[in-house]
Image 1 (cartoon, rainbow, N blue to C red):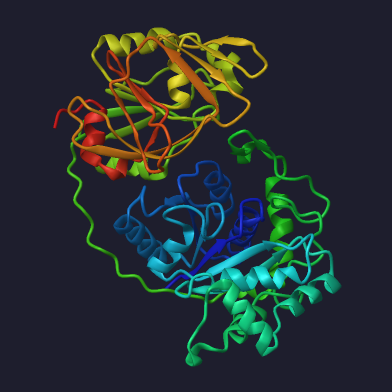
Image 2 (image 1 turned 90 degrees about the horizontal axis):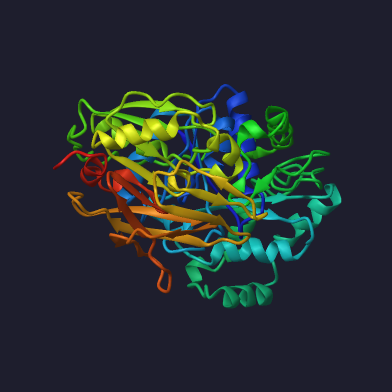
Length: 476
């Protein structure tokens, strides 16, 4: 049975990705088989976490992925790996469903990473609140981040010591956690759950790591970011050395010898018929088209498709195929390279002339358009298969989970997620719109132009394999 831990935080920017990557690297150095999951629909954190763990990172989300598949993936990972780490999204209790909902649903022990760089006694209040905001949360402990030294760590540890009965009652009232006499030792529970495991240089705080920011210990530069999130692993110089540094800082802590386990029964798997048997799907895959869920690839393979990959950035020829998948990514960062792709327009035009489908999502849709205007105002020609013009924005244009009916033989809705910094102008009339999970949000448009289907939505194929088969041109 695998050791399992969910790494969360009060908010984004607390260092949970760094700690998760450092722990994965540390356990891997110990010779353990490590599997990491990422909560939510994120693409970029999984790339870094996959580098650290040496295994592909799957997403867990009770709405997007579904409870059954989440349970199935967790149970399978617990059987196949020695350590299973789950990194949360946003703050522990943020969103509907939240990371806390996932932890409660599957009994996942929660480690909260708290940025303690500019606090002392307040650390205890944060730890207490996280531990007791939900009585049913399987809270494991906290890990102090950005600790200035041993004296600072001692202050943090003292902040979670048992309080007087008067202060204890006040803390309970603030958290809305008035408990029965049988559960009155609330702060003692915090002390037992935290200080025994994770709260001082001797047992848990990452001492000597004042310069940690977004993941790095010592005198290293902060982990690079851009408008959609973290930089890609291949773009970070000496990433292995950086992971060694954070792993070294964690190696002396009890967390290095984690022993929390859970038991999950593997649910019966839903049969996926090989509706794409005999079909060959070409998938753009490189630094410009890197937003690909591993589960999407597995879904296509379970449907019976043969997958072949090509790199538009490297100007590789389009493989012989029956359908094309153009995922999202960073076409704006490689606009000149993509514009200079000598054969792609003719190859795609021939593909469409043969009545073969293309599914393009977000960045893939932008590449198919006529032009892409960058934030500096420069206009870059794209591949010109869609009568559409995209413009990059300095601020986020859309974010959120949505479901969409793709029409034309696609049976039912496919769930997905939207996250982009561009807008699109086109004469194409949308054939449908997404249904946002959040009230007040706008649904993304679905465009159909000949044999092209395109949208800003990143589709989660496993939410509806039958509709996915139809999306790639198989009548069902």
